Amino acid sequence: MYDYVIVGGGLFGGVMAFHAVKRGKSCLVVERRAHLGGNIYCEDVEGIPVHRYGAHIFHTSDREVWQFVNGLVEFNRYTNCPVANYRGEMYNMPFNMNTFSKLWGVTTPEEARAKIEAQKSGICGTPANLEEQAISLVGTDIYEKLIKGYTEKQWGRECRELPSFIIKRLPVRYTYDNNYFNDLYQGIPIGGYNGLVEKLFAGCDVRLETDYLKEKRELDVLGRRVIYTGALDAYFGYCFGKLEYRSLRFEDELYDTDNYQGVAVVNHTDREVPYTRTIEHKHFDCTRDCGEIPKTVVTKEYPVAWEEGMEPYYPVNDGKNQELYRKYEELAKRERNVIFGGRLAEYRYYDMDKVVRSGLEAAKREFGA
Ligand code: FAD
Ligand code: UDP
Image 1 (cartoon, rainbow, N blue to C red):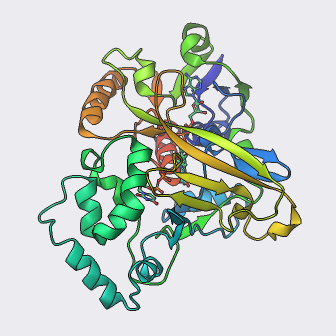
Image 2: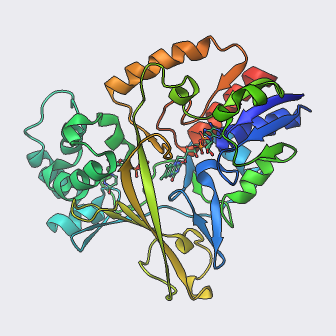
Image 3: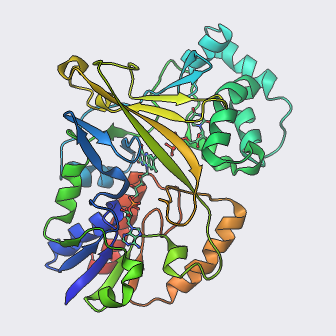
C-alpha cells in the first residue's frame, strides 16, 4: 500500500512527489504518456534537447519558487526575445521601441505614445474583450499585424469573443528592450528539463502508459490518498458536459544547417500561415555556440480544436467555461481523499512557476511547512 497514488508525471505531481518522499512517504506515479515530465519533457535529437510540447522558458518573480528549482538543477541565462514574422516583415516582440520604430519610423517614446494614442481613440471605458484590450494597449496597426491573426489561429475564435486577460500576458514597453518577460528571474535548465523531472520524482515507483481513469478502481486501492493532475471534467466522466481546451500539433524538421532562423522562437502572426510558432531548439542552449552541432531541429506549432483523446494544452477561460468549471469544482470539494492540482485540474492558464507555487502550497497543506 502506497501513501500516495500520483496521477500525472508533470510539474505539479513532481513537486508533490518531492515533498512526499522528503517526509518518508511512499508514492506510485501513474502517467498516461510514455515518459515523465508532462509538458516540460525534452527529447534528445542529435544532441539537442527538443522541447517536445512547445517552447518552455522558466520565468518568475517568486523567489521561493526560483530557489526551489535552482536547488535541484542549474539554469542557464536564456532570455526570451522572440521575433514576429508578418508576411515576411520581421518585428521584435514583445511590443517595444524596436517594434514601434520598425513599424512607424519613430525614434522616441514620445512619438510612439502619440501614434498609439491616436490609434486607440475609438476605445473608451474598460475593454470588454481581447480586441478592445489590444487596441487600447498598442493601437490598431499592431493589433492588425501582430495580434489579430496570431490570436485567432491560436484560440480558434474572434478576438472580440476572447477574454482580455490573455493579451495582458505580454508586456508593452516604451524602451528598446526585447525581453518577452518582466519577471525578476528567467532561464532554462542546462541540458533541458529532464534533469529537473528526475530530481522531482526520485524515490517514486512509476507506471508509464497507464491511464488512471481507465483503471481507477484497481489503482485507488493501491494508495491511501490520490493526487490527481489530469483534467477535472474527465475525472467526473464529463457529467456536466465537456470543458473546452485548445490542443496543438507539433511538426519537426531536421535541417542540415547549424542555424536556421537565428533565434529560438519566431511567431507567425498573419492569418494565412497555418502555424503560430517555429521553434529552433538549439538556441535555448544560449551559452553554447550553435556551430558546435552542424544540424538543427525546427518545430512548427499548429493550433487545433481539442477533442476527447487529444492532449488538452490550453484551458479556454471564458465565462461559459469558467461557469462549467465551478460545477466540477464543487464536486471536487466533496472528494475527501483526493488532492486536485495543476494546469488541468485547476483549469487555469498557469505558467510553470505558478504550477510550482500551487504545488508548494498544496505540499504545505498536506505535509506541513
Ligand atoms: P502537465 O504538464 O500537463 O502534466 C499533467 C500530466 O498528467 C501529463 O503528463 C498527462 O499525460 C498526465 N495525465 C492526465 N490525465 C491522466 C490520466 N487520466 N492518467 C494518467 N496520466 C494522466 N510555462 C512557462 O512557465 N513558460 C513557458 O514558456 C511555457 N510554454 C508553454 C508552451 C506550451 C505549448 C504549453 C502547452 C504550455 C506552456 N507552459 C509554459 C505551461 C507549462 O507547460 C505548464 O504550466 C506546466 O507544465 C503544467 O504542469 P502540470 O503538472 O500542471 O501539467
Ligand atoms: N499573442 C499575439 N501575438 C504574438 C504572441 C502572442 O497576439 O506574436 C497573443 C495571443 O493571443 C496569445 C497571447 O498573446 O495567445 C499570449 O501569448 P503567450 O506568448 O504568452 O502564449 P503561450 O506561450 O502561453 O502560448
